[in-house]
Image (cartoon, rainbow, N blue to C red; front, side, top):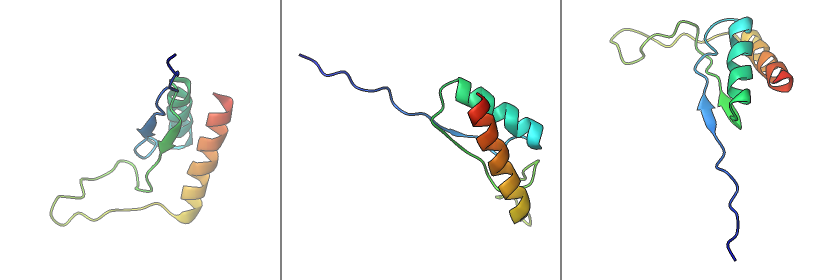
Length: 80
C-alpha cells in the first residue's frame, strides 16, 4: 500500500510587490489564488535598481511603509 504524499508547498518571490498598495494587493491575491503557500516581499523602493552596478546602493523603504506593505499583503491573502 502506497502512502500519498502531500503536494509540495510553493514559496514565491513577490519582489517589491510591484508598486503601491493596489499592486501589492493584486500580486498577493493572484499568487494566493495560484496556490502559493508563502510570498516574500522585499523592503527595497520600487522600481528596484541593480545592486551589482558600480556606485548603486540599495534604497530601502521606511519602517512605516514596510508595516503598511505587510498589512496590505495579509488583507489580500485573506480576501483571496
